[in-house]
Length: 538
Image (cartoon, rainbow, N blue to C red):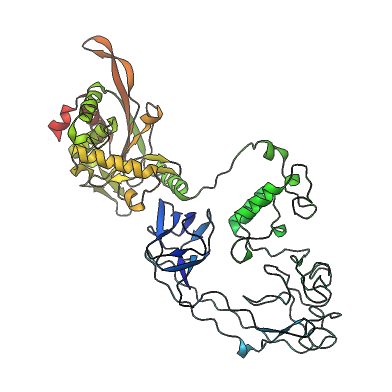
């Protein structure tokens, strides 16, 4: 049995969200087969399986945020070695049906867990395995009883049903032996032993407690054994996101039966309990104990139409927010606007679409704007630079990685075309088309968004004329391209309809002063008014 731990797929990422599993428990997997999609703070990434075998268990739910280095899937590769907890102690059965515990309680009999071995992964190595060890179990002196529910990992209470948790409260000493009047080591009825009738507050009512007399006979929990009740905190196996969801929806986790790994409660279990609750408030039909009706404790407005919705800030949206705050409050922004007559550019776009060289690519006004930005950046190199705060230097880039802001369901992404200044116009059109298609499909990789030097944001596709864009961190300029629409324009002293758009350039005033920003914006506008200038200045 092998475990695949979540690797660091980016640069120093510490966590990722499980978006979608491509496999299920019991299915065969091969090496390099895509098994899961995860969302980091930068992008959605597909992870391949480094092992071949059969999926033993999925150790993380969809929608759960997992730390780097935590196991997310276990695969049975046929070796027989398992990282699972130690097996339950061997038990024998007495003639009266009670289980007899045969494990030794001495410290020198407690097996030492095998040392954890780091498993190689395809991408990254996760975190260093912990060196935590289990504390040796203390021996039990004669005449005293071990704490109720104090079991070691992998070992269950005698007769208790799977997944049942009980509070750790020491029981009264038995008159004779460990387990009451019964023979020593037996689990039969006891007046005050561990497995006799439960005292109130320890194992709940004897009729439904873990160790109380049940349907299967005295001292052995029957099929109806439920969770132990306690006036204090009840142990429930559920992850923090699931606990928060249950708290927000008013669901009592102690009343649910978990369907996840090791009997843990999942989001689906909480939602199923929520859906099963009737509007009449009848808690008996929901399968929940009286007084635990979900809808009775949530305002009626929640079910008739919620007044608000809360969306967790995570993944790409969280990273974008942090980057924008850092950029807005670090770099002094200046924004300049320029209205441009795009009539000649729109005619050029129409003519390019008819050329054989552009038959397989998309030709749009954005292509012409991108080419104008590349030519203008070559004429004014300081616009394609960055401020290095640590070294107190301005870094002028001699290559242009042209970023294109893309709106996706996961948030704002800014992938960039590497070495865009070296591409011909058909190659640039193909690169822009592939970039947009990948972003819409949610397949943009972290490497595609790293190393940008200057950015274009096309707000015109949303019917917007202009805006004041915020710089992408690490860059000194960003150009907003507004919608192209017909407007009255003065040509040779006559007012005529023309295709006009507005350009808005934001720049870092520490690097780009007003003169440089104005010259750059003027050149971009001049090339869009007369595309022939692109050929003359290139």
